[in-house]
Image (cartoon, rainbow, N blue to C red; front, side):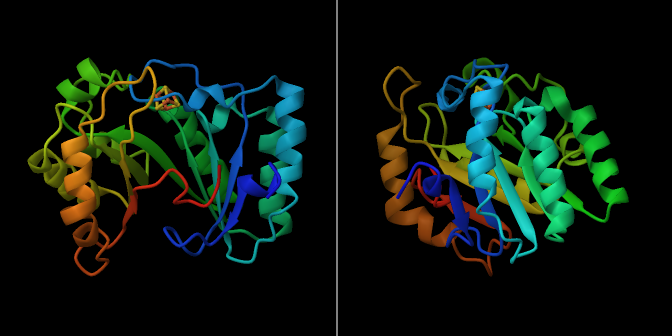
Length: 240
Ligand code: SF4
């Protein structure tokens, strides 16, 4: 698989019914989350846009939905890339766009949603919340959403969210509470299993092992947890 092909997926098993592109931007402005090094997948504007053009050439529009992932937020993609995506939506009659932004961009995200709505495109904005335990999220994970922002307020700007489980200090009880809140407020919820890594905050291997052995099957049951997508391998979205 070439580097370009590895950045495109059609209807991955974990999230069927969408095309997924993993694009490059200038990198996340925040870079402080203790569990993350994704922002290293970044490049200068022209280099990133040239790669993104090749990846976007793979998009056919056949599912009617496009998911754009980058190591950061939609607004950190090159302007040329964002414009190209919007013209692909029009050309290929894609009616749903899922893409992620950090909370710092929530007002800009709402403006994007309104602009796309006028063109008949539904924006399913996605946000990494990781947990609704805001002390853990802000003091340990250093997510940068801030304290005192209610789940309902976040859900008034975003339709999809990501949760993270498996860091030292987390528990199954909190995970169940996070999933309950997330599914009550968001259209789609992505549950990422933490894998740690060099220089990153420690993974709780007992928790992640127990998740794979006992909980994963339960949370993949779409009748019990409609809208919950479990991502327990880095490649579960078939990109990267
Ligand atoms: S906001 Fe997202 S990309 Fe940026 S450091 Fe945190 S997890 Fe990584």
